[in-house]
Image (cartoon, rainbow, N blue to C red; front, side):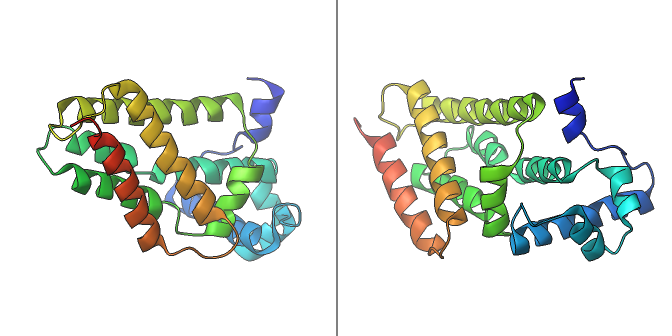
Length: 207
């Protein structure tokens, strides 16, 4: 393990319920502090105070705030159910627009918990090699499931299914990332409607 990996790794993996609850309390507090104060001013002292633990207890779990933010990003990735949605629908004869809508809505819902924290995670979260590999692996799993869905669905007219799968997943994920995390509110129902119309129309092209 490199020094960079050690800097971002949690120090203590909880083995008891009480320890796991403490870790979750630290992560929840960190999310609130980062969203409220920003990353630069979101110190470990503030996180410990919000979590109602001593600073020494916090450092038993995480060596620094970079490791905490990286853990929050991992938790965000783990909560993304979009890949599971595509896997579930690839063998079902559902209308294409309905499938696209469920996919888009799932991506949007995964970004609604705290847009300010999401923006900090996107812009400032440290990127270890392991974390980047995890993000890439998840992206390719999503693309693979969507490609299979496109190959089997009778409403799909676009010819290059591989490129279409990559284009659709990137467009939806990046658009939602940018618009939901950006300062100022956006009507997520309208965002869903427009994305579904755009993606469905593109996938039907050529039919």
